[in-house]
Length: 554
Image (cartoon, rainbow, N blue to C red; front, side, top):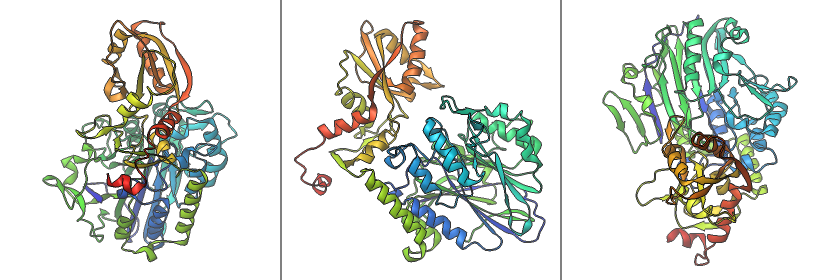
């Protein structure tokens, strides 16, 4: 399935030549270790080798007036065993990414929680990209280690100017001790940031942002850059929130009145190697012209004059309503696609077949990934699931909830030696479904790539737990932020809350607003991933299933 969204992008790109420049931008973000395809979901059956072949096709077939860019906006790690079963988090993922023809990348927050991961990036990954791995507001605390670059330029064909590429991370809290993150609003006051604006003959600015499209940091960057480069178009490739969405930053009501530019656009391209963002436009003396020769209007979701039209089974489930501004539809001057990580889709999109699409380098990457998957024993079967357990907090009728499975079955079955345990898990802590059928080691890594230590808050009053459920956290209700045991709470009872370290800190802070200084947290010495693993080993090896095929037929 290919999702197509058409936008008005009214900025004119002045080009000092009569030659048109055809620009193709391929955007990846929040890959989170998903380089070996989604074996349980055939919609996303492409692996990182297919991505290589897809990009290679466009770069290899580009003409003298064509510019093809592959750009990533962070969070390469924490999501699968290939990312997180290695001695250092992301060690193998970084090695694989160095084999892909990226023109620029930005660092993500999931690379910044582990000191060893940070040092590995500074020592082995960032130097490879020679200043094109970006994060202007991210620094190593050791001045002798260069963790990220600030900006770089890309020359347009035919000496028609430059593209300025800058990279940023949101105002992250809780990073490892060997990294320093400068808030965006502070960065904008520093002279070192403004030096990029002195680059000559800049025709376009691309910002690689591991920042959610709607975040205040995007607004701050857009306003500041627009004030200093009012006639230069801006493209924001965003990430972090795992949504598919786009936004015209100049026509929506969130725009500050002081901003004078009229040509800034943002695109966020999902997560977990499910979609590629794909932009095509032509730079010409008359502005941006849409490339229409591809003919992919069928088999798509099209946002047109009458709103959303579903064509050939398109799926809008992960398309944000931010994309639906009617003011963006007055012209077909700019074209944006979401292309599924699907092998057949990539063949169709490039008008190739296996023999013309596959490359020796892509095949080598495939073998490399398969070998590491085998070496890490990620394909070892540990059990069989009768049901598909959905990670979504609110499941449809007849569906099975992963959070209910974890909170009401897996965690209570563990050897806590605690009375009246009450379990709370952040809704973002369980990252993937458990699918019906064979369960392998890698599936457990996908559910819990973090392996967070579980912490206990002792002797919590039932009344305070009930009050906790009525609180808001970062503007969200308790039940949007967390999933909790189904246990009915006695207001007069006493309970031990057990949660991951990350979530327990927030819960502890909230509880101490009810009774200041009354509560503390302690480590249980257990982490979540082995608990899930051991539960499946013990309880899901049903001898009545003699084979996977028999299980699948039930």
